[in-house]
Length: 272
Ligand SMILES: Nc1ncnc2c1ncn2[C@@H]1O[C@H](COP(=O)(O)OP(=O)(O)OP(=O)(O)O)[C@@H](O)[C@H]1O
Ligand SMILES: [Mg+2]
Image (tube, rainbow, N blue to C red; front, side, top):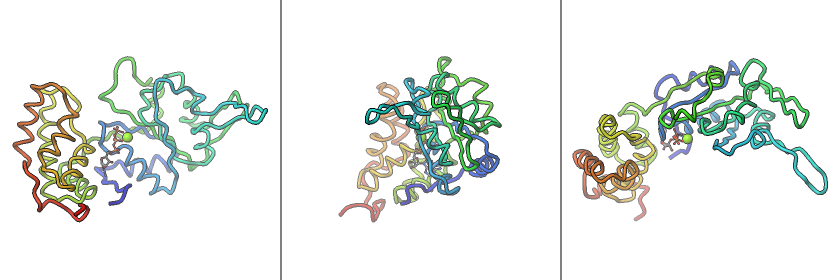
């Protein structure tokens, strides 16, 4: 198993590469666990650039991004933040869940994401021009968007948007096999189960099961769990705590998965 193994679903790798070579920032959108972070890690390897990840949240300030003055040994010195370090070193800077950050914290990115490609560090009295190898990548999950947490059009329209979704079933099953070593038939049954739940999404009204939870269930199966018990723990339980919905999900899972641990599905990764 390789940590950065990435299965492409379409044109996202090419779009990313074109954007990189044109020095354009990229916005990844898609549901949880569909491969956004994995794609960024993969592109870092492919393009030979380090990836600096910043997880965005309500309290993130522009100083957290660009840096601040600190007292060090009696002196006051400027300390670059992760964004400034990423710009100076020509890295890929990945702002995860960018929609969580406040608008005033993101304003610092405007000059970096247009033709200027420049960070203005007013407090440090420094102007940092991004080298060609610097790339800004942001991501967010449109399902979490609320009116309070909308990105401004002036921000969104600066990016090449790469809209991601779960892989096609065959491809998603390949990911599960590659990530966990389970039999292709087990992977396919887990994907079929997830597909049925995703198709019933309009009834359930929750974020559907992701590739991440299928990989997690398959890991338990690889370790000896039955498919149904693994799916209960990793796929069904995180979806809903509502008893009636749980019963409906259980029925779907039981229709697709095997109940008992099947020795034939175990792999060489299992400890004896
Ligand atoms: N295209 C893919 N290729 C390889 N693995 C994938 C792919 N998509 C999903 N996975 C698997 O699903 C897991 C979750 O993917 P990832 O962390 O990239 O999701 P994400 O979109 O960043 O989710 P979140 O929005 O919750 O951060 C990965 O660790 C990997 O096991
Ligand atoms: Mg992620």
